[in-house]
Amino acid sequence: MKVATKLWIGLTILIILSPLGLILPEHFKAGSAWGEWGAEEMQGLVGYIPQGLEKLAGLWNAPIPDYAFKGWEDKGLPRLSLAYIISAVAGVGITVIVVSLIGKMLAGKEDR
Image (cartoon, rainbow, N blue to C red; front, side, top):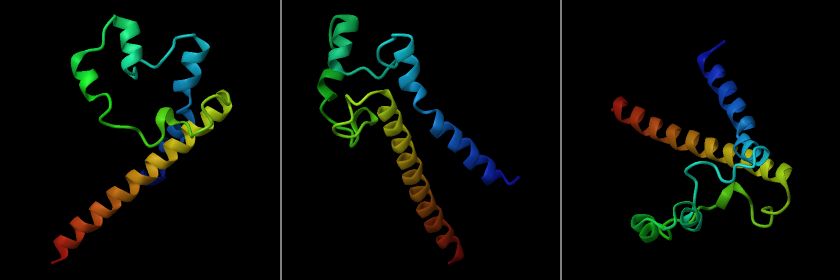
């Protein structure tokens, strides 16, 4: 089996397992995943919002917040799991395209 085939199989397995980030905390009543807290959650956990987090909290808004599409937030764990998988596929796809374009640009410079 080629290395590239093994890579794609591994990525596919990881994509399919990505909803574990939702399922396990839900199963164990653990709340949010460690380190994915927003400013409000940080306030509740430690009693204050760190100055740097407060200053930079509004700097970036994710295109798909919480990996869920608009209107899917309250549709239950199966639909959120599907949204995680779709987000993972989109992320892998974008990464493959960007890396391929960079590779072609670099390979084109060596031909000159």
